[in-house]
Length: 135
Image (cartoon, rainbow, N blue to C red; front, top):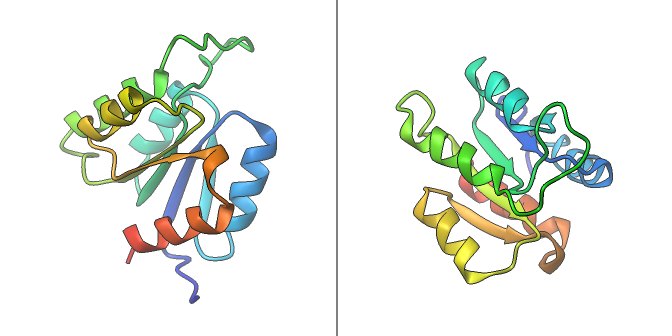
């Protein structure tokens, strides 16, 4: 695999162990940054130069440590991205533990390029999907 260090991935994930896992996996080939909440993610996206987003669906609000698992904040962010002509070309892979077909359909209807259930795949598959989208 060749290096594509000119491409930038934003990982929107709040779980420290997963941040470490995915960052370590991807930073050999891409520039990887991480945000843990919707507000900071939006600021990073607005700063520009993001080629692909790995988006968790259940992420906490900026100033709260407690996650409301009924809120699917990632869907809100995905919808906002795809409705904005400045950002709707950014590729998005939803990377979540939500397994329902309804959640999968929602993500795809909102414009996600792929939907991955974290517990169903090995990290290598995530890398392969990222590489395919960024070819």
